[in-house]
Image 1 (cartoon, helix red, strand yellow):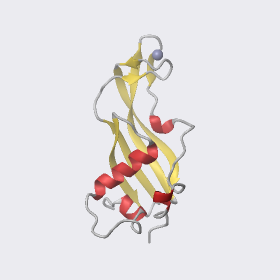
Image 2 (spheres, protein in one colour; image 1 turned 180 degrees about the vertical axis):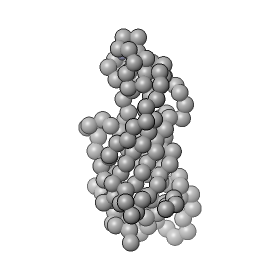
Image 3 (cartoon, protein in one colour; image 1 turned 135 degrees about the horizontal axis):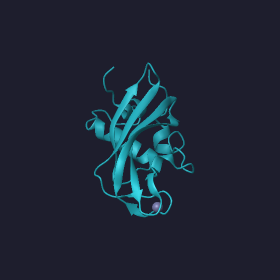
Length: 141
Ligand SMILES: [Zn+2]
């Protein structure tokens, strides 16, 4: 299957000819869509056109303390759990998020899974609704 540049597919109409730095554009796109903040970053983006899905791998840049979901206190990392989420679709492609989510050891609440920014219910995808992205939102052929 190989690795394709999703932003190139997504935004090929809106972008000037020539390209360059395509991988970083993919990462920046999903950083914006998911509202990621440090230390979370997009590690890898892979487009599975036959499966009509985009797989996005997210990771933390380091093992700095993460907030307890109950009391928001910064707690040391206990361990990590591999998780997958179905995010809002991106331009008719399923968005699958993969990440190793840290569990933290809170002195008050014990070992609990840290909250992740993209799993908050209130957040909605900005893709296909904001002007700059919607110009490129059509099924690639
Ligand atoms: Zn706590």
